[in-house]
Image (tube, rainbow, N blue to C red):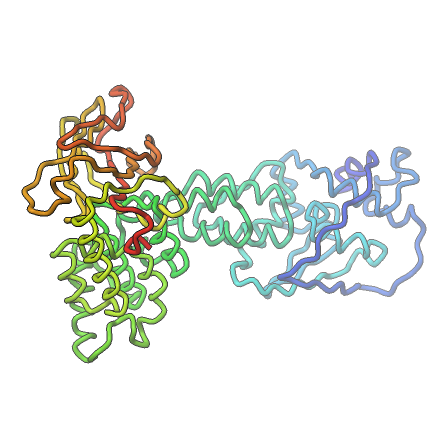
Amino acid sequence: MGLLVSRVLSCRDSSLLEPQPEAIAGASYIPGSRKRKRNSLEELATSSNVHGPQNQGMYPHQVLNYIYWKRVKISSNDAYQNLFLDGHDSDIKIRALGRTWCLHKVFLCQSGYFANILKGTWRESRHGVINLIIKNEDIDTRSLHFVFGALYRDADLSITPLEVPQVLAAACLLRVDRVIQQCEGIMKETINRNTVCSYYLAAETYRLKAVKTRCFEWLLCNLMVHPSVALYKEVDLKLMYLLALSSDLLVMQKEIDVYTTLKIWMFLYLNPCWNGTMKQLLQHANNWLSTHMAYVDNISFLESEEGLIFQPVFKKLRFQHIICDLTSTTILEQDRLIPMAWLSPIYKQQWLTLLRTQEYGVIGPQVINEQELEECTMRCGTMIPKDGRYTWKWSVGRLGFPLRVTFTRQCVILRQRCQRCDGSACHNHIRNVIFRITLVCFDSNKRVTFRKTTGYKILTFEYKEEQIVMKLDSDVLTFPMCIFCNFLFVNLGNAENK
């Protein structure tokens, strides 16, 4: 211990920045003996070798300043074992959560939190005790032990991904930047369905913006593409609200499938002990909802006491892109999940929009406003299982126009498809559509390996016209691949888009 301290005290440093006050823990210093006046050399004598000529004239706050800015170097595991784990030559005790750690001031001062405390208490007895009152439930003795131990090691200690949120909480409390950076690096590299929600919450709590963004992007890509019972159980109300709202949500099939995803998520939220597979989940959710609604008259589930908390999430569904399809509309009516007060105005507005389209020969949207598009576009997607030429159609009933999508290794093509119709809208040979096409490939760990998007664009179609909307490099494509589209067929000024 003496050799270590003498190395620490071998040079001088600038003044210590004042740490910010700690919000989630308090500390009280309990001296182990009566106070007495000591000269500066006595106060530096934490070891027998500290009085070398290179250290003469240094004051306690200067020692603390130096230690705060420069980590103590530990050259072997023996130091970690003897000083930290065994507590040899300890000059201070930390008590927290029912456990006591026998530690050393020179190492504790690497923590911004303890540096602030010890700067004002260095003159007290070296046998003192600091009691930590920790109110953060994410912090346990294991995470505290990890962070304390990290102060004694030059190399990072091993940590598993599932332990990271608790260690991050302890490191932020004690303000140990090196451990915070280690946690941040691990989180960025180990986002998966088992960690993404806990990482997102931790990143939001402790302001790790880059980690929070990566977690949210992972959820946007995987929530519907790679559904999981375990994942859905971890998504809370606020997070699902943000996902349902986003136009960047990668939707498999159509908007009615977003509704189905929210329905089974709600079932799991209310029945967290349910165990089963994804194949069983929808049927169980439908049976549960049907049984529940059998005892309820005149109101929808979301109007019931149990369903009120889910209203903000379901309001973010784009019902104008659901009720344009008879099968989807029938599902909404039979489930009685959505209040009729939400649907009636949309039915009315869709009908009026259809009449205007047929009466005036509406061309379609002519201006791109991405802020408005965030809540208005139709979201849809499909899987391309292997290399080849694929063709399918997406449309919005009579409000849009039949649109055929063709995928090849070289390009993506959109074509206005011919349909038989007596309305003037179907015979209008010039139509506009706002679209965005996104291609995504995943690896075996559900991580995105390839992504390409057109961004939002306006396309003008002549009757039966075919246009290439995305060119592809066949050498970089891997399969299976997902293709996702956002479409807007009518003017944003129309109320059905709001």
